[in-house]
Length: 417
Image (tube, rainbow, N blue to C red; front, side, top):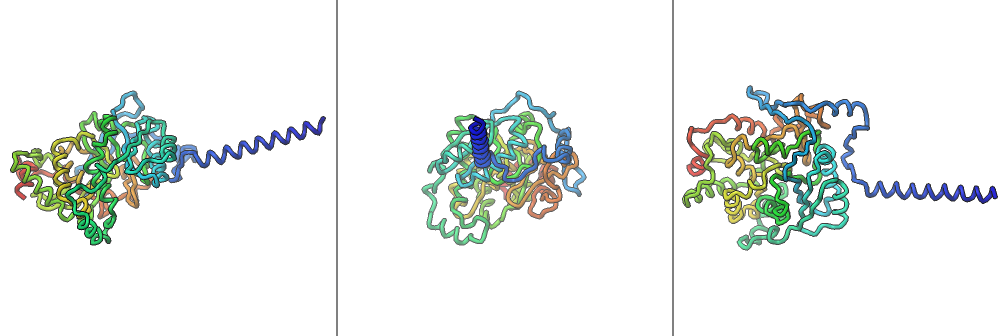
């Protein structure tokens, strides 16, 4: 009898070990990944001590040689019941699943686990079941999956595809210069994501653009969507950068032609006084040349209806007909940035200095002492005010820049240039 008892005992032990092993392997395979090896609060007292400090009430930033620094007052931290009708918009391929999970991990752990804003994923191919399952497991918020059809991802009939192919060959030495899909992406992000049927159905007021393989370094204890709405902000960025001018050689001429032809038809889309705009972020005093500065749109938070204005729709349609998305390599970043700088008031654009961010090898890590205890990054590596590729100095100076003439509008400058 004792023999049988021992046999059943060891059989039970073996079954339990097998179940534990299978469960462990399943967890390792299907759990939401942390591909960045980002620190968790439980990984050491130094991390806990550094990150558990309270959110500051304000922060100060600005070029070291600029006596007028920018001071931003932050809302009180807290997860209130107040929500904006908003969410995250992602254009992503099935093959980018791993990088997407990494981006979601940072967004969720730094911010969205407290607020549960939904995710909208868009793809010009049908999403796989694995992609849907893994991304939906990475958040407690709702997830939506939309298909981008040929009406938004194809050559329009006026484009000479042979000439476009020749242009790609000539630009092969430039970043993404020979990429056909990159051009479709830039055109889609410029003129179509904001009118995708699923986004229109959701009726979001604001969106936060997220891409695969990006990093978010800083804890957020307030809601950027609420901050944008309560402070009348229409567009926000965290990195500003210099575009390779060889990818957009004729873009500024097209912008000026648009302004002049619109004016000849009795339409002044840029009525704002130049001194109240950010035009000096993208051009010179008389709006004669494009300086190649732009907001990096792989991170942007904006009002959806900014792109639904008659001014922007006509602006995009004009650029689209001009063919530069395919004959050159016009990106959505300079297109969005030029329009926002010419159309919006200075106080309608916001710089999220407190959102640490990295895309590719370039990163923004807050240098402000008030914020460094809230971020998992080293401000020594930031490109903000010292890297020659950064346009943040230009942005800060544009905030203080006055117009050449007190009453001249942005439209006046563009038409006269």
